[in-house]
Image (cartoon, rainbow over all chains, first blue to last red; front, side):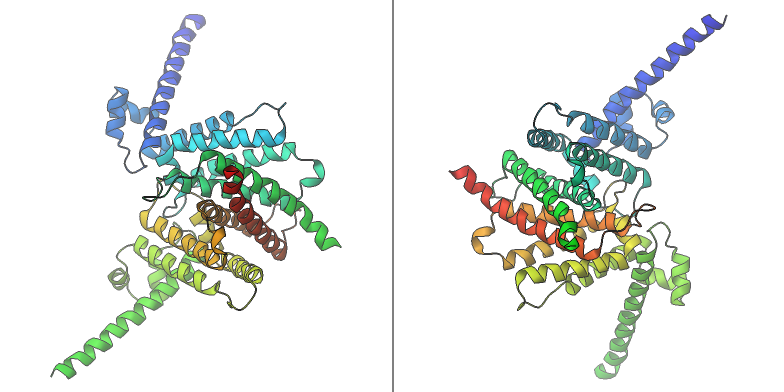
Length: 211
Length: 211
């Protein structure tokens, strides 16, 4: 009996997981191409071929779906920017940055909306952003010699993430009429240079004061 | 008649302006010390000694008061970070940064909330942030030799503003237990170094490609 009962429950659970994953993928696609306010739950249910009622069963509010999609996007971003650990650190940084900029381009409207400032703040959104930035910082710190990981270097790394985000946000929007868009490889080069310089500067600062 | 009629109207207008200014100052103080959600319109009306009805006459919604207070804060920040144009550019940058960090400390909860990411975005809030960043970039560009103001340098300057914001946000929160807070002068030094390095790197990048 126990076995016969558990199989449908297992299958149901699987169906729930699959359906949830499909809705999440669809939500991610919609939030990537439209701003939060533009995404309509009606449209989403229609695109998924399910009723609004069933959609609300999986994600009780639009905000819930948004937060889940953002978490998924953050995980994908962290995974995709992973690089071959046998490559030289400087090349790994450039490869990771190239993937990052491509990711931002693919999710342009969502990235702009996320980074452009709203009324008040959302603790869950803030936490996902913080975790993602923390993961990037941790990845860079791993490759640094121990003596370079001072608190000021850690602060500089957070600053550098801010530098990357601010330039990506500017770069990803269409340039003004007549203006040429900065080439992706030039931006990658700049971002890598700024990282190496900032780490060196931050690491030297406590030494300077100690003299 | 015209003169007698115009005087009270003028005085009324003045009273409206004064009252509006007082409410704005009070709103700025409250939004600086509490997050948007924590600020209560009831409390604000009580602190101002007026009815909620009269408060709504000046600012129809909490959001209106928030946006007006943010505009005021942005204007104050831009004014206060103005420096003596006869000083050397590097010293002006350090002075401006010191004032910036002091301003962030004085408005800590509002700054954290503003920079921490929320659900969706607000066009007016986004515009105020963009204008403020643009004003800082323009101020730095003014002091740069003409040949250094390439599009990539402009992009680097926006990136640097992001670097400043990200480090200020981290720096302003209480450090983890047992951890020492980075000294303000060390952070100022780092931020100034990163700026000078980033401008040099960005300015050299198109040259490198042109060879």
